[in-house]
Amino acid sequence: MIRTSISEAAIDAAALLAEVTTDATGATALFLGTVRELNDGRAVTGIEYSAYTTMATEELQRIAEEAALRFDGLRIAVEHRVGTLALRDISVAIAVAHARRAPVLETSRFIIEALKQRVPIWKRERYTDGDLRWVDPTTQAVDTATP
Image (tube, rainbow, N blue to C red; front, side, top):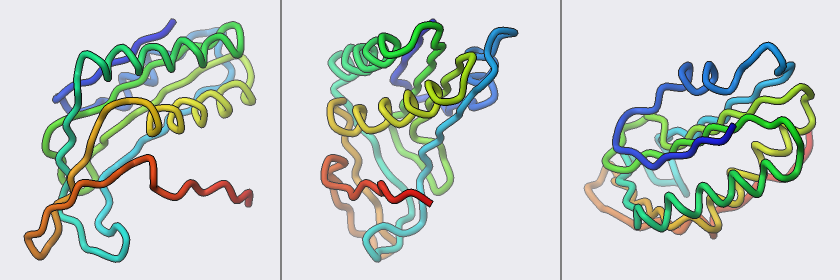
């Protein structure tokens, strides 16, 4: 089961979890990307996401299909929001379920990293001082440290 979407509607995380969970899934992960109040030392009031929707939809589906090829039995639902989002709004949600935890965790990480690199979605941050700035998601630092 794979479902992906680009939408202006608010993301319902509980619905995504319900969509991927079955009696056969022993592990489920939900990744939520949310709008935070500070980026690169600047106070943020919100983000405007825009996309080349046709291409973004196709590429997001390709990423989910690539992820599904890694492990049999994966269930994947991915949604990315476009439009104007406020602090704490969910911008992206990735729900993954499988019988085992390792495929779930690896798949979630693969999807978010590939999405940031390949899907034509752009974000423009709004700052408390009234300034607006486009942010390149491919240049954002990736935290690969292990606890």
